[in-house]
Length: 344
Image 1 (tube, rainbow, N blue to C red):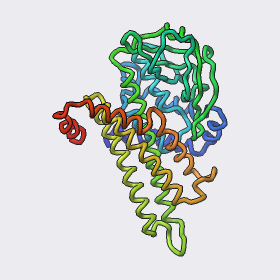
Image 2: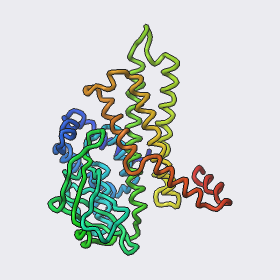
Image 3: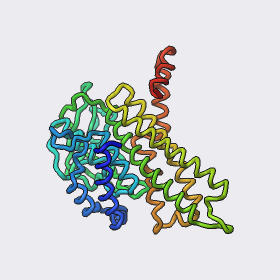
Image 4: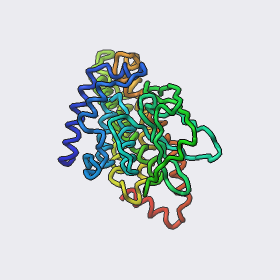
């Protein structure tokens, strides 16, 4: 870990640890934005983490942002960390002025020029956003439109973790007022969002592992700690292995940003984190038994996020299908070279 990374971790950890003493989760799950925590997040300057210094940001880029997102996942931060950082980054790239108001990115993969209304489902934090930043393709160009909240119809919803995931509808004509997003494809944006969520999942997996190990060593059954039973040790060993694999996969994807291997490594990170999420949640709750499901015990705050996040920005099945198709499209003589490039 270099000096800058250590500074990010120390600063963000201090802020996020303070959040744990608040009622932010209760506010979020009741449909409110934790305003005090959001104000503290803005005051520390994290909103511009991804921007270059010339753009008025911290100059940490997506790699630095992923470290922040991992810490947010570890500390179960009830704020739109991924969405706010990515929206500000994309807005800056298209020349749109950004403010401290929350804007949320959303991708339209297939745009029908004949449709009158646009309907988007499960938009993160839409009810709390001042605007939606809608990304779409037109005339073989990636374009971006800002849709104000007063111009949308919003139907509130939430994921299993209680995070806002709202259905949104607005007039398609509003997309006519758009800007080009140069040198960035929709596929790139999709993969960056997937990496961001995978980074959050890696943090949550680390927290679940730590809580499970601690509980197993403290909880006694039949006269000895639960963690001394061989069957439990075996499950926890696999949990540790899968957690480590997820963290390594995310780190590898971060290291390959802006390279030819970027997309493939991000796909691997999201697949690995998604597969690990299911096993981690199952194992952690099995070791904790009934207490892990209670509202008062914090394990469920992490596992409910893992269950939710594994399906967002593409689940492991979808990313596996894309990666598999990519392999099929390679020439036979190129497959071994491609595999060794990813692991070299």
